[in-house]
Amino acid sequence: MAIEKPNMNLVIKSEAEYKKVMGQLYELCSHPLYFECRHYDQDIKEMQDALDKWDEDNSL
Image 1 (cartoon, rainbow, N blue to C red):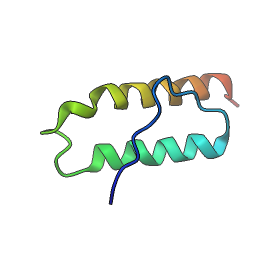
Image 2: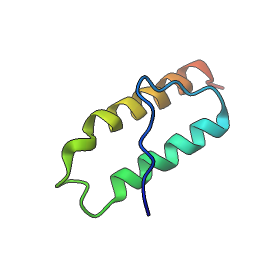
Image 3: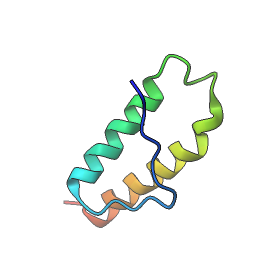
């Protein structure tokens, strides 16, 4: 299963995008070689930041 690389300067604009990014992040972090292949660190940080920003802007 190929993991789609997120866009740089990721901004989540909808709940559907939030769910998509959350799924991509889960796939990256649960990959068997995650701890050996650190070349996705910047992508993961960007995804986490975008998810956090969405949570802040859309809190209940």
